Amino acid sequence: MADTILRLENIRKELGLSKAIRQTIIPNLSLLINAGEFVAITGPSGSGKSTLLYLMGGLDKPTAGKVWLDGDDLTEKNESEMNRIRNEKIGFIYQFHFLLPEFNAVENVSMPMMINGRRTRKEIKERAVKLLDMVDMQNKYDNKPSQLSGGQQQRVAIARALANEPKILLGDEPTGNLDSRSGNIVYQLFDRLNREMNQTIIVVTHDELFANRAGRRIHIVDGQVESDRLLRERLAEPVRED
Image 1 (cartoon, rainbow, N blue to C red):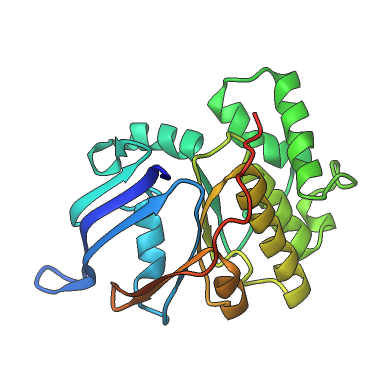
Image 2 (image 1 turned 60 degrees about the vertical axis):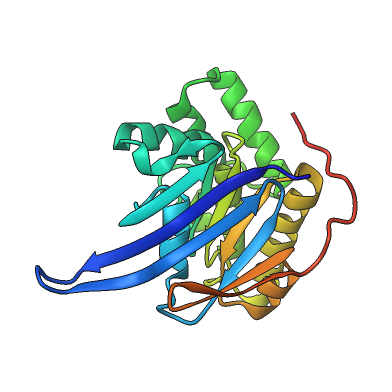
């Protein structure tokens, strides 16, 4: 039986629009994500799905309720502790790649490892190169973001998100700025990471094709789970790379 990697319990999220007015984004939501799942979160604009993703990644805290990631209660952590957890356990991929324009692909992928400080410079460069190879960017080590296509930039961003071997990958519309071909390449990469490395992946998306090719689809309406469907079973036992 798969272990639970992420647990949300009775989550409520409100925004203070003024001293007297508060808007409820998520009224009361509980959710379990197992290690090794590939989950797509969908819903109309304003449904609360991106807010939910930020709560999962500790970028925001709920007004009430608890969020556990790999045994850590994120709601009890201070910002310093959360910075460490985000660096070590969470890989973020956004609609825009947020690569540093002055650095090449290898240097961008190296950044999280340099912040982490657990590898030597040689080890960092070797892992950055290995990750770029894994996302089929082996000929672009020295290219800066301006010298890469949108799809290539997003693949570098995925390699960077994997740098510290995160427990979960969180994607916020990772194919939103890409054409259909580049978006399909990104999907295939996520699928391969999930199947071959047992990487837990949670993606917020408006892309119906992407969502229906994930392993599980959670549809959010007005901050609540309207449907939660298993779309496919894993075809083979995963092999985790050390």
